Length: 548
Ligand code: F6P
Image 1: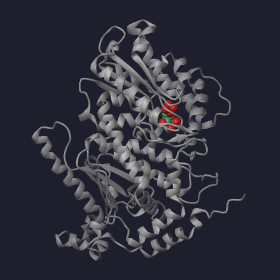
Image 2: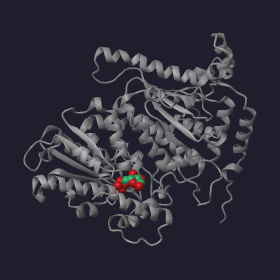
Image 3: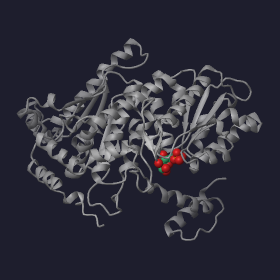
Image 4: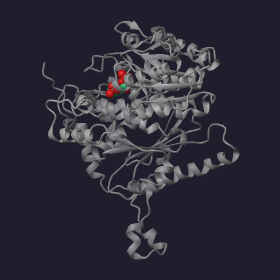
């Protein structure tokens, strides 16, 4: 039967938003606040421990109502329910999308192909907890009987970014006697630097790969094994120094890791949605099973909010709609995530995969080219550092860059009183930036300061730059889970509206295939048929310059 659903841009709700945008062209946040005293209070939401201020957005009640109508027309909640029910919404891979089951409480029932997956999830979590406790207590020793002091996670993409980010975020909760490192790059320098000062007899490698075929990970894992065996001599050492996190038992066994030391997950967990699965083992070893479970509870809290909160107060829906508003109706190409927390230094890099691998698509679910913008470029680093680097462009450049400012009421960890006192200055910067971005500084205000006329344009800030401020009392494991689930569901909402498959990633395949094809040209000078003239010349230059 032919598909008679109107395409997104032909929907009346879309056209209504276009008209609304055209009518709103002159609106400034200064005016929106001046004419609506209740705005700051009204445009504030709460989910779990997260307090969200979205008043500094280029929106009115009418904008929100029109965006909600678009969400209803595109059946965002119907699609959400299908995901939570375990339907195979990742159609190009014919898979269910059930990262929400990874944090479902014991006793919940979630079925895939008629099988309740929650008991399996908890069986793996329990197995991880037993293992993590053994490593942490010293009961799990290396081949020579020495205690494990170092954990090296080897993985890439979703098998690296999540645990590496969360380890950084939760450093204050980690066992500081353990050294935990993350190796992802196939550049040998990554593994070299990670292990150069470690004693192999005290080192555990956690090989994280959903498929266990990813060339970077298998190459690094093979080199890690050689490094270990060079020192410990005996093949049997592998059993005490290597564990695997994977869905592919066959490949794990082929690599030489005992499948008794494999922590399993399932094809209904996408790589970029996997760090709360077995992929989080290194993190669990670092922070302990209790803190890991607290983090899962934080995820679950936001899952439940997304699943049950009405549209008007559903925060992931709201954030998703705001992204659509800027990307599709204001022409914004990127979205900045600017945490005011040192511990969140890897947070945006993690979100890049979550958002850009999910929604970087240009065909819809039926394979037809889209004629609307999809996922934004997501970028950013901790805010105070960014202020002295690229904020100039956000304030006075020519691009509209909506941003999230994330901060906490209290510092976490064992800071000295003096360092803890710096926290107010850190947060003063967050609040000041939100204010400066929204309201700017008019030419008249600049003149009133006695600035020479020629300099007035340079010192004027137009303002009108939208931000969401996300505040929580402290950056705990639960709050981290809440934040990640919030972004996961925001990404879901946008993919649902754009009618794309947010859960496949075919775009990464071509580069992988070509790299395999080109490699023999580099190593052996082999003639690679079909190599374009530019790449051929680059390969030849590389071979001339390469020192062996
Ligand atoms: O190449 C992209 C990707 O498939 C990601 O989606 C995934 O997170 C990453 O590679 C690593 O894959 P794996 O866990 O199978 O090694």
